Length: 387
Image 1 (cartoon, rainbow, N blue to C red):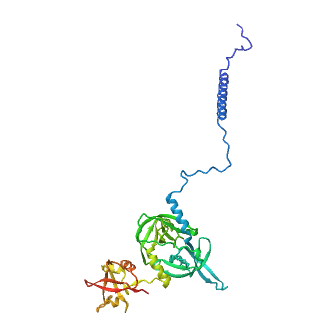
Image 2 (cartoon, one colour; image 1 turned 60 degrees about the vertical axis):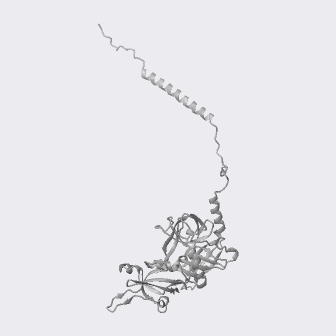
Image 3 (cartoon, helix red, strand yellow; image 1 turned 60 degrees about the horizontal axis):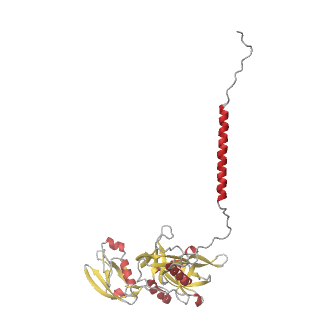
């Protein structure tokens, strides 16, 4: 059989993959169209939201009234905030070259109106670095102030401004003897130079003891959690009726800002001291006319009570026959009288003696119980003014 010189051409089967691709493409188009149709229909059914360029309507309180506690706080602030002042301590200096006199600010704080004569009460540490001050009232008017009297041991001072009586609203004075822990308090002042700031809180503790700038103890101090910051010093602590119950004087804080522990000098102390500052310019403290041994040395010698080192010749203790420590013939020291009680108050250290004396005034007669070589005796002493 002869073979053809040309290759024989065989028919090819149809391309199946091409047909499948076409089918899938058609299905995808159908699904996409269905999704687009659904989205369009959904949007047509939703209402069109327009953007409003008008203020939103005000939502009224359910009863359209403030709470009773809120109203009380607002009323106290409105009524007594004008009694609170801003104080800038100034130091007058003269330039050596030009001989010009200028006032250099030394610090700021708060204070409050004590009476209609223009007397302002504040902390001593607010004005201690200046020789004069400037007082700004709530209406923004400022007046030069003279320092009338200071009591560094109690961190109190009195200034005097010549302002119209109608601008001066004295605070009503309350009492600190009847205060209770948990009682609501309000503090008004000028912290960080801000005008008329109100903070509220409660009395956290009573009968606290803090140190004044002279390191003398201030007793019966009020502790509060009302925010007290730098600049609040010298401002009033008020009760819920707006009565003065203390002067904000210190905070306990590692950072120097409010940490929820603030202290105020009690109003009973203030009300006893301010009249003396107005009359004498200083605090006339009652004393026995003695010098005492430090508590540290007394403790080392295992002595409980206040050891009298010496007595002022002709003073109250001297007239009462109280004797101090003396030198022994062999060169040692012989302990003299030791105070163990003043009236009915037991005396174990110097702070007990100071606290007991704070409850008296110059001229009071007190019973002083002394111990010497194991024997006790009681003498009457008329308290004298300390220099």
